[in-house]
Length: 68
Picture 1: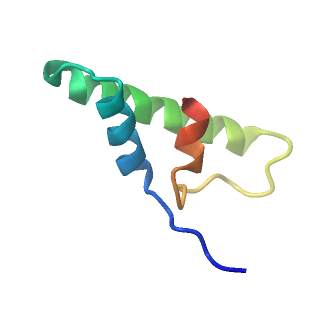
Picture 2 (picture 1 turned 90 degrees about the vertical axis):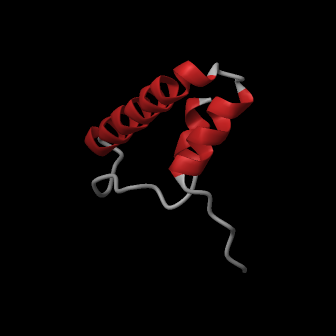
């Protein structure tokens, strides 16, 4: 079994904003909004009764994909 190529959340968020064709003036605002949503989702997952350990910074963009 091989290892997958990971995409950092920062790269994934920037790609999502770019694909949404957000005007340049609103780019940073949209990035900040998505990062806040990601942090909120991580905090929620950490308090979930199914969580086995506190959520850490994601290794790849899988958690960001959940926000789409």
